[in-house]
Image 1 (tube, rainbow, N blue to C red):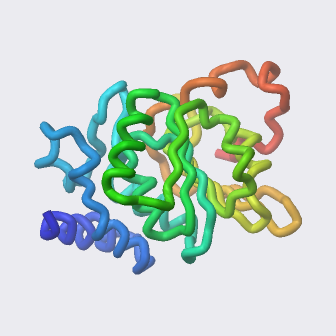
Image 2: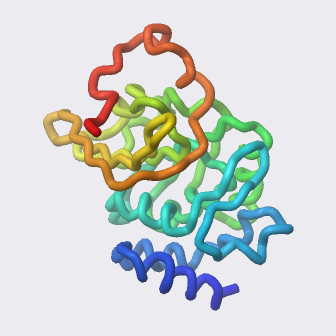
Length: 225
């Protein structure tokens, strides 16, 4: 389906505002149709998200590309992904970074994504089944972190596991959501920039507990509207 991928990249991604040639090449090379249910393969390269089961989705191609571009990967980074889903975003990241660690809370999706990525010989991806709200501390710090489900606030554990100079990209919000680019400056300060409104499935698990039960406050957890 190379022609469909080429058309997707040209019209939906490069035709908008994604310009990083490495991102465009990755989107061109990863077979998106391999990550969607068989009954939806004919829609794999269309300009919208698709259901993958368990109430989860594979994001719209443009959103995958835009979030990836915002990470500003050069090739030698260690990246953490929260929300493996189908494994598609991890596959794209694996083309652009040295190593990708991906966590998925839905066990059936996790096992399926892990098996699929292994069968496709992605040797620089590690998949873990579990709640990603606390990150993956054994392999921290990370050069970049991407979150593919929307929490109501920025997870403090992820900020702690982000290297100085690193970037965190995530959707945030409940009734309304926005895509955020969060940067940790070399001196450890947190800077946030709203990119545009989005609609993602909500993050589940520990994030749903009241803030006082998480063992930390929510300073720097809300961006200005």
